[in-house]
Length: 126
Image (cartoon, rainbow, N blue to C red; front, side):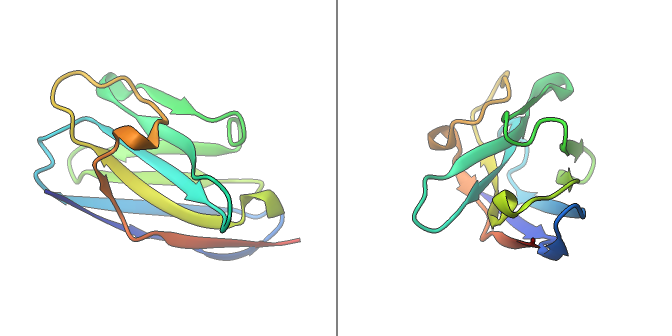
């Protein structure tokens, strides 16, 4: 079991920045991929950033160039620096953990993640 706790959400003006963090605990030796997803009510969940083995990172086109993902492997904390936020970034943001053992190429397929946090809301005022 892996327990994930997100923090850092809040309200910001368009063009502003926020930093999300996800602290993982439990059986964190069970896998290597962690990711951030977001969801707007009534819409499908969207994978936006993921990291896997060897520090490889993958971003969705919607956030590439604006968001930066980093992972502290000592504390198993996943951080998402979000810059130049727009109204389209309004969503609930979730951290996820892929418990697959062995090599993990970063991916944005939510069905392959085994553990999820409770989410943190990001509100961008235009």
